[in-house]
Picture (cartoon, rainbow, N blue to C red):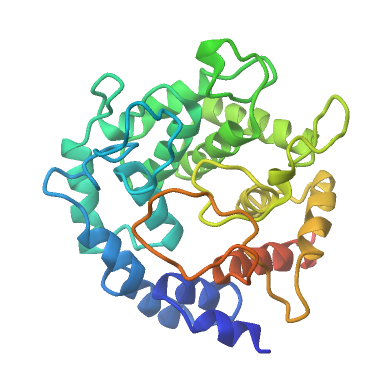
Length: 314
């Protein structure tokens, strides 16, 4: 089986990343395919779904119809997770359709928490980390949410969305969202405080090998070893490895997670979707739990190519 051809037989949001990261295509070919994300396929469908008030599905974090008596009911159709999905698709932030959509969010969308502008974030670090990543990605002012994140660390240097309810130990899920956002913000400028926050958050993840308890070495939760896509607010080893690939930090404490990922490939060199984060969605990617996934395979292959590459000469 030709894995690259299988990956290319897909949506522009996958194809352009395969061409860039795995197929060695020219910059012109990559750019042309990326430009299609906003006008064809999954990306276009998400952009078409934005409401006149700037929101998706009538809500910011949860859609307007979400049941208030089900506070932990996950739904992925509101503004926050749609913007996260568009960034995962790699929609060109300078494309006119993306500029228009993001300007509507910036000018009109407010958090339910206290009416804060969307790109100022709210209180939970798992939310704010994604907001900061999106602010950096779409060229928006994320300075307020960056300051909130950097100032909200627990004593172990990372984050937990339950801190305001008494949690004193950080969470893998909250921390991966925070470090992704801080890394994106720091790559766009940042400052010493946000750089330090990124560093302490990464150390939290590395000290635990991305999936183990530091205290006992036991697997903290089997779901951390299961590959998911889209990841939403959840951490797993592939998401963690993708973060360290993105910042090019080849730490030996990642080795166990890398080999665990490598061992999950099937005989054709494909990776399965192992954990679907259930909830209403706009799009069906055609990925069935327990079956090969183009998204998971793309992400796994580029992590392994990065890890296995010869490091640059000192």
